Image 1 (tube, one colour):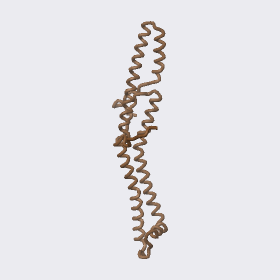
Image 2 (cartoon, rainbow, N blue to C red):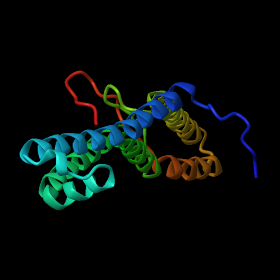
Image 3 (cartoon, rainbow, N blue to C red):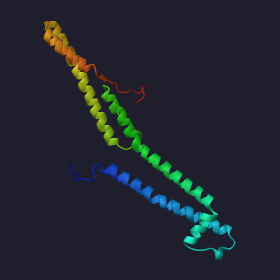
Image 4 (cartoon, one colour):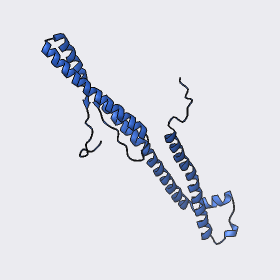
Length: 191
């Protein structure tokens, strides 16, 4: 097993991810505290016998007893907002991962040359550039191999070399598994 000694392998991505997660971790307790504070103030304004109310945990128990519906509403809204924020944030990670999986499925099916297009603000922009560059290089190599195989096939035919013709045909069978996806033009939308 290889032990990783460098913990910041992609400094920009890891720092941005850590900061975003810290905002979520710090914001959720603040929002929950604000909910209880607002509910407490509401309860105090509704109760004319303010001096007789218990303090500390007794106050929380009284709030839970008298204002349970308001607490449920605030907590539900807070959790909904937190869930929505987390879903939005993870979409910026899951979207690119989904797109990479599509591209790798295309490569496995023999379609080479496709480019990874990410939305502005998505994670893994550097990886998308590297994968797109690798796909374009592979597509160029496939095109060169097909061109060379066609020239070699013509040469074998002109020489009447049956053995070379058979080897080129076998080589062409392998190359037929691959098709080069054309780069999108301005009139052709990117996938």
